[in-house]
Image 1 (cartoon, rainbow, N blue to C red):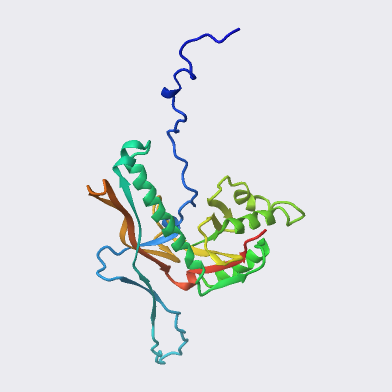
Image 2: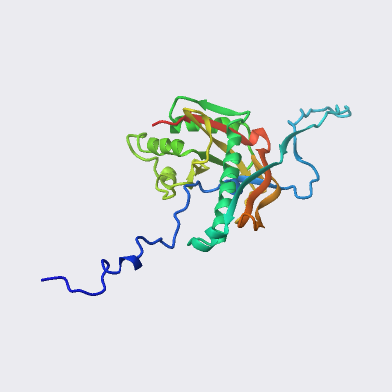
Length: 298
């Protein structure tokens, strides 16, 4: 039977869109930010200096036993400090009138993407503190195992960290940890102790508790070198629901929170926009952090 003449996509093809755009933009691949969860927050907006000093008590001096009537020897009590320098993290882009008028995106969507770009950098900077930690367990060239992890944990506890112990591992390190869960103890999981981590549906972020340690995974964990990743242990305390811990081995000093501002330039027909934050990261005290370095490849 012949095709019936009329209005069809062949006859009126000039009025039919060749393609359409979904009302959704797939997000850029990014890690779940951990710096706001694990980092100790220092408000430096009124500091009046580009450097924040964080004091900490030194080691306890020796005490003594005295006999009746004897004089107690006077001893010194000292402090140490760690310093954080403020850095301006920024990204800049021209948002043109044509993009605003013709795109399916809102201008706020474009600005939000810029803010997320800076936030991703801040998270990576925070986790980079494991790379340069004074205390570390270097297993370069060797895949992470539960046994190596437990040795490092024991070494971290020997540092006498205060608070809840957390471990932040790269995707590679958590992969190896999960693999070892099913290969040790006759091919069985470590019972209920590993069930939370092993059964976690999180691809990136909080995995669960194991051996009294809260385990986190992040693709923003830095490299130790080209062949090894640098995760690590950190102690936190004074947790606040929905907020940063009161104390942590990782510190975030904030001079200016994340913000975005734009100036309209008629001669460019657009908004010259900058998203930025002035902040800095450091280790609050070395005994609260321990780096863990292990092989990337499976």
